[in-house]
Image (cartoon, rainbow, N blue to C red; front, side):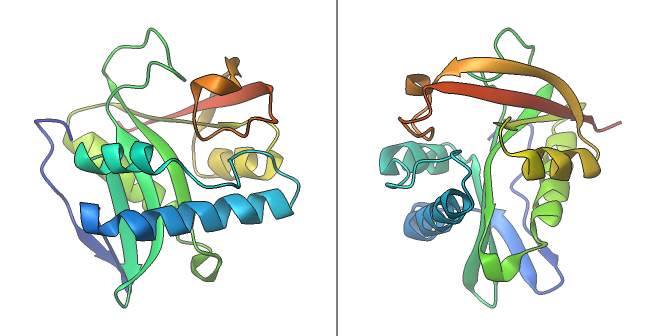
Length: 184
């Protein structure tokens, strides 16, 4: 977490969003893995279906970058918010927050936009002016979703699938679509 950001927890209707702790690791992984399997069932080869790397997510939690959403104490959503992203946004300055791995359980459909708004609030509270994200360019529904949420397409970049442990090995040519939203 940025030294200028304060831990934030908020309630949105019946959902509470807060920083994840090491005790939340299995819940976060379960949400991510469930979402990866659902994407694959729809023919979207975006995330590995053999499980997210435990060490990757545990490290993100230890750095204070992972948030978890709960409804009636059940974990229903998660996202990672970072202050640098040299893999997907090489050469950029530190004026942005970078959201990754936003996922919700199927029973919590519709929560994603609230998670994005929460990430915008946290990012703006650090004085940053932009929230950036990326997604698999082959996921047309997700690209449209982000555009409807006010994100503007910046570019498409090609990554070596081996550079990101969340990309399926079968997806040799991974084209990520970059998006950003002004927080002014």
